[in-house]
Length: 237
Image: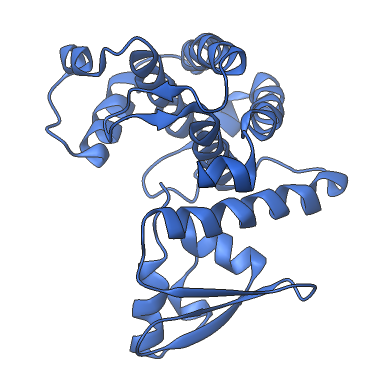
C-alpha cells in the first residue's frame, strides 16, 4: 500500500495533536470556549463539538455500523450537512459536557486504532481504508482545527509538525488524483504546483494551508488562473 510505505502509520502524530489539544482545552475558561475561530460561525465550543461528532463517526466505522448514524438525523450523503447537524445538536450542552464527550470518544477510538495493524481495513463511508492512513487524516484534521482555535504549538515541535503535515498534504493531493503536478524543491522549503494553464511556487506552510482550505487566495495571487489552481488543492476537511 503506497501511502503506508511512504508515510507509515499516523498514530504517533495523532497522539501528539490529541494530547496538546486536550491539555489546552482542559485548562480553558468560559471566555476561551466562546472565542471565535477561523471556522465561519463556529466558536471553540462548536469546533470541539465537531471533533466529538467526528469521533462518533469513527466509532461507528470501527463497529461497521455507519448506517446506524442515521438515528441522529438524516443528512443524505452530505458531509457538511452532518457537521452542521451535530454541531447544532451540541450547542445546548455545557462546555465540559462537550469536552467530556470528545475525550470519551477519542480515547476509545484511538486506543482501538493503536492496537490494530497499520494496514488493517476500516469500514468508512468511502469504502475500506487502512487504519494507519486514517490516523493521518484525523491527525491532519486535529492540527488544522487546533490552529483554527489558536492552540499554541511549542517552538521545538513546529518543524517536525510542519514536515509531517507537508508530506501528508502531498499524499492527499495525489490520493485524490487532483490533476496537478507537484515538484518539491528539497532543501528550500518550497513546492511548485502546476496544471495545464498555471504554475505557482508555495512555501510548505502555504501548501499545507491550501490543501486544508485555509489559504486566502488573495494572499498569493490575483491571477484567476492561478486562483483556480490553488482551489484544486482543497482536498482535506
